[in-house]
Image (cartoon, one colour):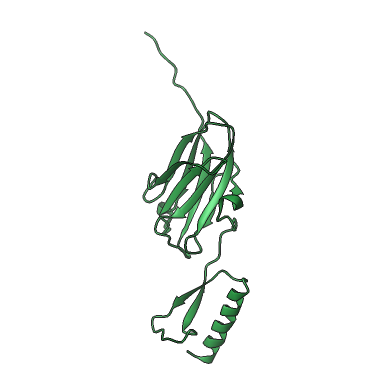
Length: 175
């Protein structure tokens, strides 16, 4: 390792120790036993971070097309919440496969007390996920999304959408 590379490695490790950067170390293909033989790779979180727990979930405002999220750390999970009306139908979907992402999402739906209501893996297009559910009460519902293989990095991003279904009824025609 050249002197400049060692200096950069030391600076990166110091910044990691201070909690300044979401820094991940990956061994180089030619790594020896020296701890400085690690190359620093940065993966930045999406604009909704931190959102890795039930308590740190961000609001998903119904009516928007989608939010763009990513998996930037190992075991990364993204949480959102939305307000639902009792009796209304909702869909929670991820879109990654058709967008060229490596993400293979799994979606979980929770009630306001953190009880699992439903989950889905690959119920959407390709490796995407989709949940269709009727709200049993008016109030807050939570969604968790994670990568099935716990992959992360620059190619692990997805679109998340939560939508209320418009209900319509066909007319009854009588002869």
